[in-house]
Length: 246
Ligand code: ADP
Ligand code: MG
Ligand code: MG
Image (cartoon, rainbow, N blue to C red; front, side):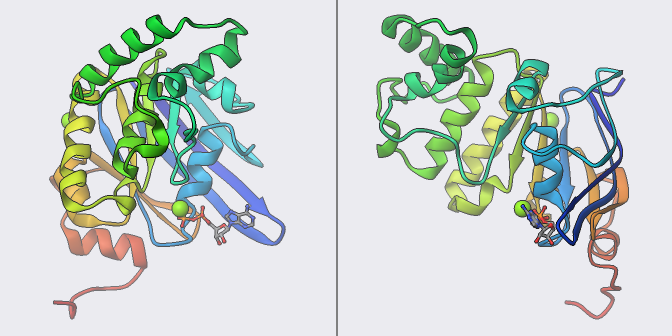
């Protein structure tokens, strides 16, 4: 059964048709890559799934039920967390304070520092990063470790899907390896990952299935990564044949 199903999603901004019929089916525990060229509509898609934008039309099903994702809190309550390109972590706070920031906002309650630190340490261990202290100030972290904070926040609640918008764009090659390890940890825990990228090599490394978006439309939905040749993916993504590209 699908965890998330999107059918015929459309979204326009003054004069720009960003999404013109996007379909996407994500299964529990898979790495589902969304592939598309710059401007294809990838970020607009994930912003509608994270409640930042409202679609003009189309349907979204979550665990089989039709849903409206009215805002960022609604997305989190469903179990959808998003790791944006512009990471939404607060530099002046510790990792633990960042991880539990949303809880205080949601519940109006105050979480005690010792408890937040202990729980954050456990979550960092789940992500394979027990070497990072939950007391570290986030402003001192690399972009890679800020991503870890964002994922730790997702794991601090009952998250079933983490959407990552081009996470490797800000990482060096060793950091990308670490990210892939963390993604594997997440999926082993049954969490699905929607991984936005235009880098075919990394999609081959970590992706289970691929949805391709071109000019705001899905050109292929849920292809198996292992069974889909690269020239075919490039054709779906660009609309061009690649026979002469070496
Ligand atoms: P991608 O993430 O695949 O590069 P985007 O979803 O960012 O693509 O953009 C899709 C199209 O929508 C582009 O033409 C972009 O310029 C336009 N667009 C995205 N966000 C906005 C916005 N807030 N206002 C106006 N146009 C936008
Ligand atoms: Mg984008
Ligand atoms: Mg896997």
